[in-house]
Image 1 (cartoon, rainbow, N blue to C red):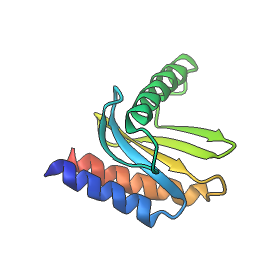
Image 2: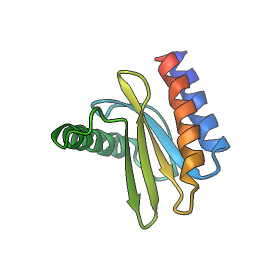
Image 3: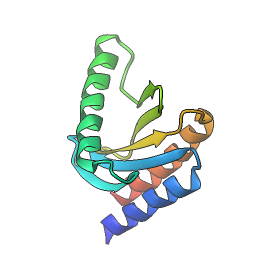
Image 4: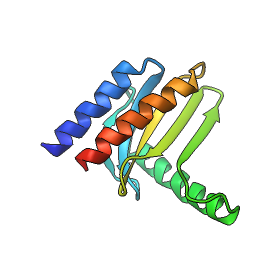
Amino acid sequence: MRSEMIQRVLEEFVVNAAEVEGAAVTSMDGLTIAAHLPQGMDEDRVGAMTAAMLSLGERTAEELQRGSLEQVLVRGTGGFILTVQAGPEAVLTALVRQNAKLGLVFLDIKRAASKIAELL
């Protein structure tokens, strides 16, 4: 039941945030909790890549004395990958269109992450 509620929040996030193409909630070690991804995208791969980004981001923030990691943003030629904390044990990763207004995406993902954190 809790996983269904998380899935619903995730689907609402992707459907309502027009600039988001897909999203996944994963544990800190990369295990997928819920996903709403574009067809053909492997949720296990998304989880593994998210865990790798988190590990490197946390280490980088610490080593360069930037405090605790809050988010990871990767910009590629085809768009963005944005990962934020969704409670103490999980993260929300969004696949964002190339021409997105990131301010709106940051607001939407923060709201979705808060709802997910309450469910976990």
